[in-house]
Image 1 (tube, rainbow, N blue to C red):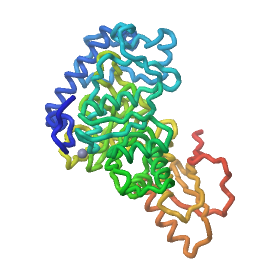
Image 2 (tube, protein in one colour):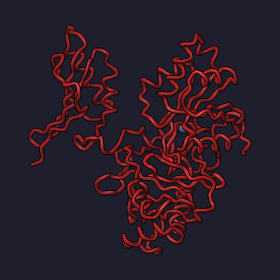
Image 3 (spheres, rainbow, N blue to C red):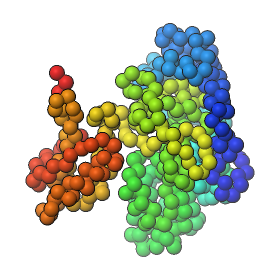
Image 4 (tube, helix red, strand yellow):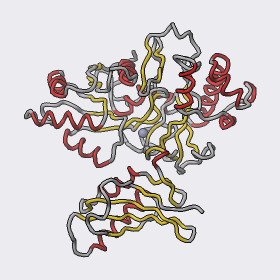
Length: 427
Ligand SMILES: [Zn+2]
């Protein structure tokens, strides 16, 4: 456990505010070490790298990163099936571990005797948690690893965890009230459920519930939902993103500029079709490498879509930043070179309560993509062209690509419809 100064909002200020040149050298050193260790000690990596024609000496630093193949969860699953339980990715004796975690789809994950990863602890500090806080951990302690990882991370920052897991909302509300819990970790929908439960038993959310900060994950957090939770409970809501295998990949600090990438993870954004890195401001798949020597993840593709940004954050952190997660690679459509995701379309429409139902249709005319938002209105309005203009402005703002809005009669869009329908033909 670490003695953090009250309200520092850093887990390790020196590392988190390191200048860029030094950070690059550090990342280079850690990446090389992780790669070489994995090559020499993990059966799976030796096979994967060798069959990609990569020798140990071919990789001299970050500039060689793209020579390594990108792995996905299905590669891990396939290898685990053939070589149970850990698929040969482990560098340790599989009988000398503390836990075997189960991930959805029966994917095994080793839990070491001592927990080392500091990425979630960094996110906790960034969100505003401090030593001495009382944090209710509502992630599921049953089987899945994430609750345990966060539990260990709360310990790392010197705060106290209340390990409730999910479910039993009445008891959870009472626990929060009686123990004056001031921090929440869990999903955005679960904190919403808890606050509704608290209201239903007559509690005053701002007086009887002592929450100050919620750090949420595992679900999309549209801004409309964030502000609903913040206003309802009078708290601040911050978001973190990551996976059980990789650790935390990005988190929001108090300033909420973008997602800070933690100190101990290497993040790339790549074109999902070519596997090549794309520059800041271009959307692509998040691929991450962690520096966990026991169960290394080297160039693991997440299937999630985001972009690196060159913004700087007033909080003083100097590491790379990712924009919000835009969704899954496989659900996105590319319109004039830009990914458009159902979630973003929802965000646009959520700003316009007049809309009853909508569908986005992408077509192609004279070698140009056309994106049309077909909308049905709740009721007829006068001067609908003003509404259309406003929605078109929001489309441009949120999707960063032009779209047109067309009002159609109620009942035109079928009940079961794809939110974004791609009608382009490529012959
Ligand atoms: Zn910041």
